Length: 151
Image (cartoon, rainbow, N blue to C red):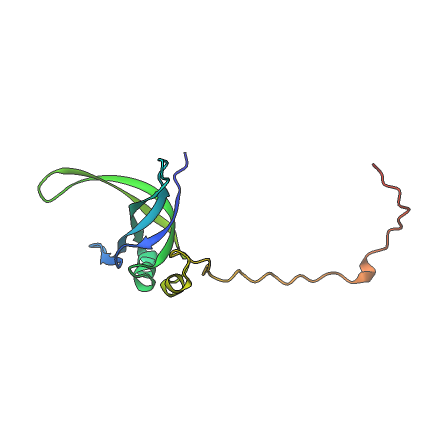
């Protein structure tokens, strides 16, 4: 079985950082994502998806993301049942993040006139490639070619 969701959307409000009784950080937020409606007009519909991040990732989201920012999330879809204040049984479906990433900045998207989306991507730099040392040229002998291929 495979449970993986990857979404890019705009934060609908500032993320909320809370602590569990054990001191574990948890951040809840929602993002607005567009989907095409397959009707006559092919107009876009907006879905509001609830997201939850835990521990250091929760602190990261609350520190660096704010209402209106474009955010990328990668995680799994989870459903949980609970009772509300009035004793009614409720079901919540949300994305629990494995990874959160920048996809652009609000300043770039509003000034750029690109329908609110930016082509800029912000990510950690790629790890440096290890330095390889080649052996001395005298360790190899030249192969003579007679332009006759073996196949």
